[in-house]
Image (cartoon, rainbow, N blue to C red; front, side):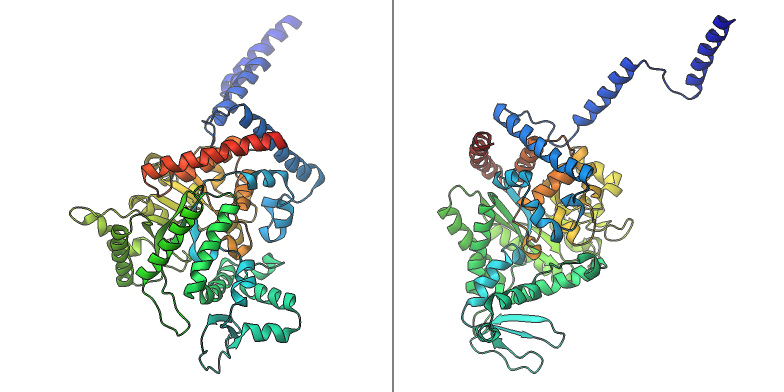
Length: 513
């Protein structure tokens, strides 16, 4: 009787398995299928195609162990996991990290998504620029700081200009005065969750940052020095190449005379060429001319024609076109459709590469995230941010098919309130499925980040797996060259320079660690 019941039970179990559409697996078979699934996912990850050499493998193990210590310390002891909390609070913690120290020394290739007046540290701006003669400041009727260089300032009851030198001397405490200037320019605050309740709150402060900085930055002697310092700071952070979204603004002199955009482009070109000559191990710097997405169509068309003319005249320095500014209140790509289609409709078609900001939003189905649709259909060479991309599966398919790189800017997305915990960033799915990606820093000076190291740390710690190693960082560096605006020949030369630095880095780190 017992045997009959046992047989009946076995039959019933088989029937039950069939009814619920599952396989009744032995532990060994289950583990085989489990491992197969894990390996299939690992083979699709970002960096999975890279085979590391002996030295790279050794450093990768050290890197993974350091990463896992940070993970475990947070999980077991409940300490802060830096990518999950505002960068304003965690920057000192990050800089003590062994992972960060390795990343900082690593040759990172290029930063492909940066903006002209937010790439040189505010410390340099305050300690250098505001100490120069003829530097003036005032607070306007809205209590907004204004700064400018004048031989003789204008008379205004709404903004009473005084020299910074005078006010600094009157303060009685130079260090405190400089800290006061910094707090009035920077968007950094101790309690970002309270101060910046909405996206618009932080963008308003961000706008005031540019108001002050541009008053100093556009004075031509400062502009030249600022650009040299930017290139030097990126190089010191082991970044070998830079692409700047440049508005080509008018520069001014002490008497208020203003230059035209072509002169600004020529200044860029002169400074960059000189820096490259003085630093032969530096790969270089290119510009992407930008227009503001609040412009009326006729102004946009004027900027586009200007960019076409400049790319033809200065092909060694200018490589494309973009629209900048907060996407939410700004005009969409579709709003400018006729203008943006104009180059491709000419006979013969005019080649002007597009590098569009698109999808920098946490909304879905809005005019902002639909910029992603238009960016792809307009054949963008790269897409800036693409934060909302994971909500658009058909666009994702097109991006993979067309091999359009997405410029991920982790700290910018966190600071500008798209995501609080970077582990929840949509780019996680892009890294998991090996999309064409680069990591950049957007506006590092505005929030006190290094040119690229802090963003690389955030991406490595929050956007890829705990067991992902050096291959991720290596592919990010290589991608920054592959998806850059450089020509094929320039890329070949760039890879040679980068590989030389990379090999030295590996040998040095293996010996040290």
